[in-house]
Image 1 (tube, rainbow, N blue to C red):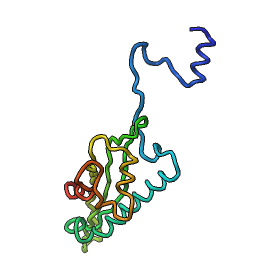
Image 2: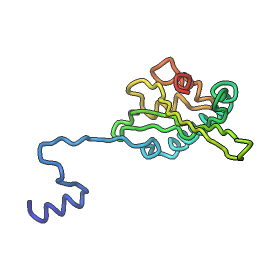
Image 3: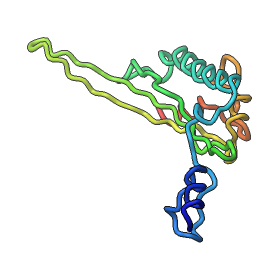
Image 4: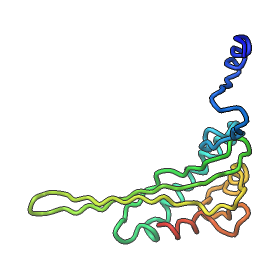
Length: 160
């Protein structure tokens, strides 16, 4: 390879680190925020995450937040998206909680913590755009997921 060819490849951002004949993946997975390319999609994603948190906060005290962990908090809803196709690899919703016990004789506080990673029950081949459409509105926790008869709430019941 001559110097001019090498410079042309370098300018294009190509590398020769893989041996010739070895296939490279055409795309990889990125987080949903990185994949979304338009402002309306990005705003729909932010609204979805906000509404999911609000929906969870509305029901927590009567459902999941009874028992040993009464302060379960939504940390983040996140999806991986194939950068070439827009197909979701996985969506998870991460939660955390704690339980504190005070020793009255010493003043010490012991803390038990718990985290949960709840996988959303998505159908294979679900795209991020179909997910955003299906879960638009103020109650995405209860909306039917594309290609299924289940909801994100159903996934939480199996997780928390």
